[in-house]
Image (cartoon, rainbow, N blue to C red):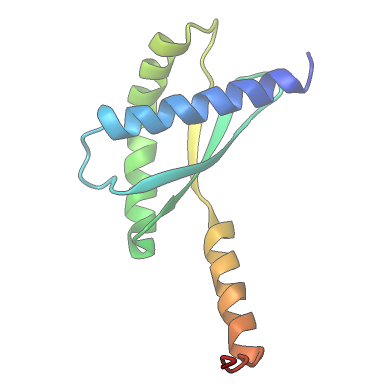
Length: 118
C-alpha cells in the first residue's frame, strides 16, 4: 500500500470529523474543539485524532467526552466515507500549539523590543 493513501484518508477523516463535531455531536463537554491532525495507521485500523481547545483547563474533561463519543463518531464516519472498514478513533490533546505559544512568550520576554522609530 502506498504511503499516500493513509495520508489522504487521514485528511478526509479530519474534514468529516470536524463537520460531525460541529453539526452532530451535542455534548456540552465538547466545546470549541479544533482538530489539528489525524494520523492513520498503515493498515487503516486506527486513527489518532489530535485536537486543541480554547479553554485548556477543560482538556481532560473534553478528552474523556470525545473518547466516549468515539463509537458514535466512527459510525457516522462509516456512513459518510463508505469505506470497507472505518478506523477506530483515539483522541489526544495536541500539546504542540500550547508549547509553541509558550516558547514564543519566552522568546518575547528575553529579546528586547525595539522602540518605535519616529
